[in-house]
Structure formats: C-alpha cells, structure tokens
Length: 127
Image 1: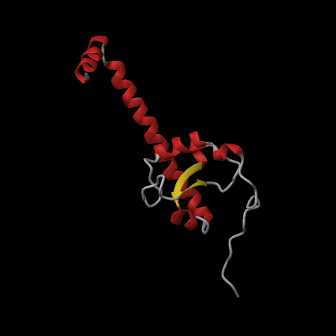
Image 2 (image 1 turned 45 degrees about the horizontal axis):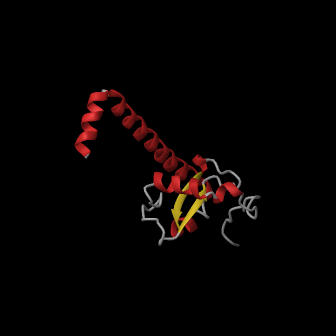
Image 3 (image 1 turned 30 degrees about the vertical axis):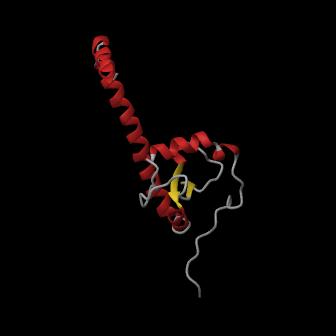
C-alpha cells in the first residue's frame, strides 16, 4: 500500500496565457516583494532563478492577488500539500499588497499636508 497521493488538478497541463508573461506585471510584483522570495526571503534578481507562482494553481488566473514570486527551491516545495500552501501564500500575498497600499497612503498624506511654500523649501534644499 502506498501513501496518500494528492489528486493532480484538472488544469495541470493547461498552457499559460499572454498576461502571465507580461514583463511589466512581473516587475511590479518583484518590486512589491522587495526582490525577495515570499517564503524564505532569499534575494531574487537577474542572476537568481525565480518562479512566478499561481497561488490557487489555476494557470489562467493572472490577477495580482493570485501571483507571488518564489525562489526555485520554495516553488518546488509548494507542489505538495497544496491546500496548506494556498492558505499560507494567500495570507503572505495579502500582507505584501496591504503594505504597498499603506505606503502609498502615507506618502500621499505627507505630501498633502505640506503647503506650496514648504514644498519649494524642500526642493531648494535638494539642489
């Protein structure tokens, strides 16, 4: 008797669509993750192999909330125990996306509170 095997999803051999390969979208996600693997926080970049992972394992679902970058080692790990990884990666991705939104709001609020004269003073100091 063998161990329990997870059933392979029906979309296993589905090809990726064009949106998955869009370099602009990929760059935005990498930047949001600060060029680090979402699981082990290993640096990702030009020289380091990286995989864009579909959190719900549906290859045609290329919404931002379903995509997360992983290093090759962590990506291989996510092939087993898929239910666990779906939940875990969803929560990680929510934090990544919320952090991005919060930083935008904070910088907007800071800019909004400054008067025109204060902005000019700051700009003149940079020169």
